Length: 455
Ligand SMILES: Cc1cc2nc3c(=O)[nH]c(=O)nc-3n(C[C@H](O)[C@H](O)[C@H](O)COP(=O)(O)OP(=O)(O)OC[C@H]3O[C@@H](n4cnc5c(N)ncnc54)[C@H](O)[C@@H]3O)c2cc1C
Image (cartoon, rainbow, N blue to C red; front, side, top):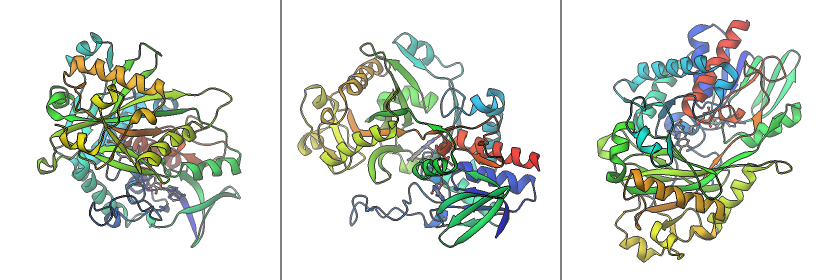
């Protein structure tokens, strides 16, 4: 079978690339996806019969139409300040233009009416500065998990007759074939002139192998490690009501490390995340008022950059996450007061806690899991946040660990997101260029446009 373009991965990067081809070209396009079509993506954990991860063949949370973003909070951060380094390849103006373009498409497919928040003109910037904190600039479109799902469903309806989707079809290997490429799956081999690889974080190990086989240069030196904080929504409501998602950075006094808030979920839920069999923690929130909880959660992450000779930053993060899985059978939860007193949280202390946990996690001691430098940074930041949101450092504030933000190795790409091989593009989180919905989606539009104009 021969296609003009093959896209590997149906996450935001792959979806927006295929959308662009469908809208602006008559190219014959196929998308190969390891996971399921959207409506068949169901995690078997029901909290009753199945309480923890049973390691399905493909993870419905991470794989399938919509990619890792399908059940996410659907926060599209329109900014060059975080979420990826797309602007370093294509320029700041173009990157922002494409993020707005993606937003317009989302609005036209079920997202209209959802809120757009912005830090521009916010008084919190000054308040943060006065307390050794930095508020990063961004506009945030919050679709919410429910509307995000609707938008994905509508996009699929529009695309399915224009693009050949192969679900439950992981690509085993990718080879050069003449001037084009050959994509090899268990059910057959497919050739194409252009290939866009958009395999996200879950495909990072596979992509690493592809790059090794094809001799494409990569580098990997960063991982973010930390905890997810859960507290009564009222404590942060003056910030979340105005900004929804605030990215606040703190530089620690002791080690001069940067600690930052990440993925804030007002009135949301703390959830498990499975990356290659390792259980870490994450958060969700919903637009639907009926699904809102009384808590807000957000991550506090410390970035670790390694230098030579160490090259396996993700391996380092995985080892720490494995440690929490070993001690707690999954995610560990601890009251901030217990952490400060140097004792583990117990089932009884969590039950007596005034903050009701939204995730069933094992009460334990995060100081046995997180390296001192990281833990000290998190504690310092909790006290800094307490100055702009009093109550953050309360004894009953819950900390779930560990949260790890794995960064994919960065693939060597040119300003077109093209590898050293003509016609082979690598985009989205898998390429290391992006770490967010808006950047990944914009990278898909960009690569598709490059291919369309090269034809
Ligand atoms: C719980 C959660 C919440 C999040 N919330 C937000 C948020 O609110 N805002 C935000 O900006 N970001 C959020 N993110 C991150 C965001 O989802 C990602 O940045 C984004 O999905 C990256 O898009 P992508 O297309 O690059 O990769 P992905 O979304 O990971 O998609 C890659 C796809 O490729 C497929 N694949 C992998 N390997 C192969 C292979 N060999 N063959 C075929 N298919 C393959 C996978 O199955 C997957 O479907 C969240 C992530 C998670 C897990």
